[in-house]
Length: 63
Ligand SMILES: [Zn+2]
Image (cartoon, rainbow, N blue to C red; front, side, top):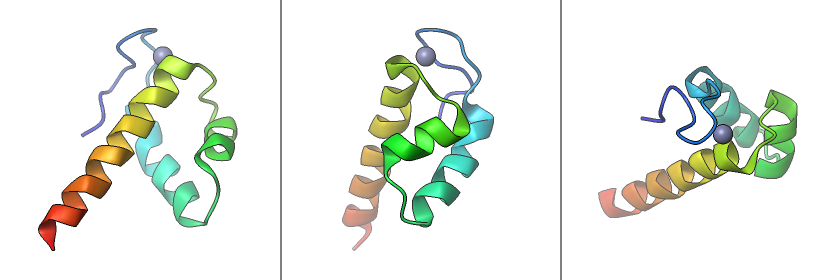
């Protein structure tokens, strides 16, 4: 699961994960979603992006 806080700046992000995925599911770009849910720093964005990458890889292995 995604960390509760960003490792770099300490911003709480764990509660934004569901929101982030819901916004992504509507077809929005990740960059736009970050703006909508208030994730401005690159350190926090990187956490979300690397997490998504890991999930998509895991889904591929399932098949
Ligand atoms: Zn951060």
